[in-house]
Length: 224
Image 1 (cartoon, rainbow, N blue to C red):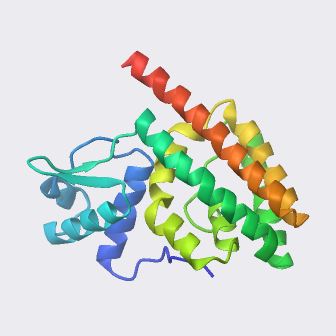
Image 2: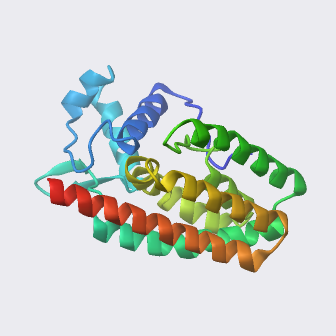
Image 3: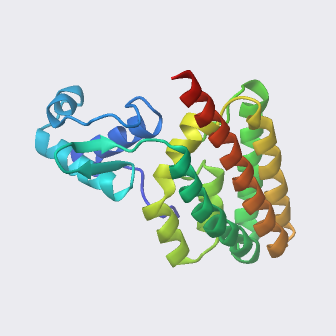
């Protein structure tokens, strides 16, 4: 069962999900100011619905409010990724260790099936895009840890901010096949119930991903 439902219950939920997706995927640019009036026109909803959505996005850490500025999408920075990925390396490493211990055989089989479906995308394209939720490799492993405090810290606190960096800077180019191979090795360690190896491989994977994204950010800053 998913930790959070992606099925909108109300029209406000639908607007929140769409606005969050547009921010995570870069359709609304990182660092840009959010205008309630413009967004209410764009999404054809009231300003109060937009205001509620923005408040929820602040809780997801992908939007910030500043005095005399208003609401802005967070900027993607080298400093930001270092802070975020240091925490991510530690927590997701722990999640992989616990997943190797706590995932059922059926859940591990499903994880292998998921990875096989990803292989087709990686083989046919130079990107490794994964929707939020159950088709996201990292989401499955976090959920597989079965530790509710850890799940809450990652999903409520970091998940969509991490996705912003991954989707906009880390899911294309030469890194794609290497990242997929790292995922394969992590799943193999989990399948073998090798807790220590699963944690080490996940931590290493996230470090490599951070280095890749840092290099992309440096390149973008040089060109801007």
